[in-house]
Amino acid sequence: MTLAELQTDLRDFVAGGLPADALEHRLVAVIVRTGLELVLPGRALDESPAERLVAKLAFHFEDLQSEPDASRREAATIVAALDALSPAAVLDLLPLLLTRDRFANIVQKHQAGIISRTSFVAAVSSARLPRGLQEWLYAASLDSLSRFASCLRSDDLRQLQQLTGLAAA
Image 1 (tube, one colour):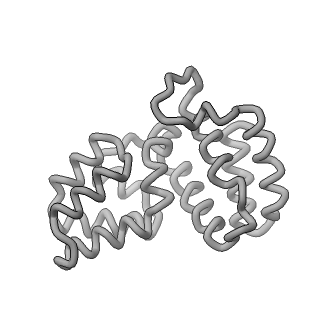
Image 2 (cartoon, rainbow, N blue to C red):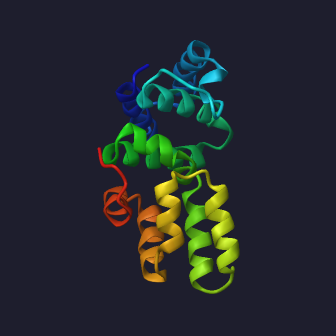
């Protein structure tokens, strides 16, 4: 399965045109073909970012039926990311994209003074984000963080790219 095929399948799943069980069936073939070694961190892989992204997403979405509404929201986020960013950028941001609401809430709580700067830095550090984005988040003003959280919540990843300097598609 290519990244374009997966993106089409996810788009159809979000729109309700592809049932969860049909998408799961297609993803099983990817899981069997790629094997677990593709998604283990720290491995030197020859595959392109697009191929690695397909493998990671196949493993992530392998059980769509357990939480179909949450899976549709996550699939919509991934489709929006693929429309706006390069496969390499989406691969780097996958941990953030799949926890975007939680991360946006952390930013909001930091802005409101509910969590300390130290706790915010710890959350950013543990999110496995690209170093450049981590550094941007550490240095960002509260206003910039507010715009960042807004972009995350609305899947406005083109604006997020402009705000943070991420690589575009």
